[in-house]
Amino acid sequence: MNILWFTTRNLVDLCSTTLTALGEGLVSLGHQVTIINSDEEGSHSNFSWIHASLDAQAIRGRKGHVLGKKMGRWLNDLEPHRETVAIVDWRIASSLSPILKRKAVPWVLMDRSPPADRGILAKLQWPVWKKAWSLVKSRQAHSGCVVSPSHGQFVHSRVGVPETNMIEIPAGVDVSLFKPGTNKGILSLIYHGRLDGHRGVLSLPMLHEKLRQNNVHSKLILIGEGDAFEGLERMAGGRDDIEVLSTLPQEELAEKLSQSHIGLLPMPETKVWSLASPLKRSEYAASGLLIFGIDHLGHRLKGKNQPEWIHLVKQEDFHFDGVEWIQSLTQKKINSLSQNSRKYAVDELNWSGSIEALEQACTSCLT
Image (tube, rainbow, N blue to C red; front, side):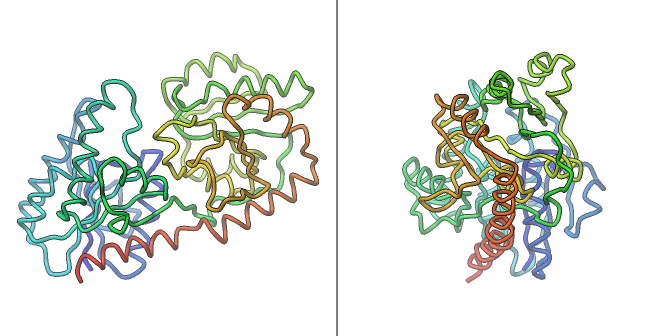
């Protein structure tokens, strides 16, 4: 099978793990995969897929439109052979749908997250998102990919797409890269991802301070970029118990996680975060971390009862319950729960199931 993956994601994005894991997984199953995006020529040379580089310089909020036009011209010049299938990100689906139809290329919609921006950008993006899923509803796209059951239910409620037309592809983790370390030292709390204020990250220094006030000696590590980065740097103020770092390469991030104890999920119970399947949750677990965060569907693991190593609380109780729970953890308890979180990741959170589900979605386009 020849798979064309049209994506607005870049390898430098925080979410590029999904692209690389699924892309390499499809190639390993014997398929030819071509990634079409705006990364520079040659930047994908270490991967096993084919890369088509398209220059798409645009201001924030316009990149999808500009890139969709460039991809349309690239696709117009292509003569796809038999058994060609496309995977298309929702941001560019409406631009490519007519051309894919004319070229007789069946396709699958990829939705890793509804619009996560705020303000005017969100107002511009939601109609694009809804139109993309309408193409699945009208069967112009064969099916659509969601990251969680709640994500699928949301699509159904907002657009009316039957859940039978959706494939669940949750975020996984490379358990060979993300794994526990042995020399962890001081109790370390860590968050990695976008450092944006609306993701709840500004509540994390306060959690750390309340632990200090309750005689819990700990270190807080925050990794990423975003509108709260400078404010968090000022809060750190040169202290050795708070570390604020820019986005790290995967290998360095995995090393930081391996030396930590508790992974943090501060994202509030809003529409976007309640639908998510956060990569960081899987990476925390694979690294043998305990997890503490806000209780909502986006943070919970499958099943009614959550394992003991993941502790989720109401947003208004985040600081009080966090201090109480962390105070209750002995070294023996941390070691035991760490082993359990790692085992869960190896058994339940590897990428194999998601790769197989995406392959089946593509294969079903041709039947």
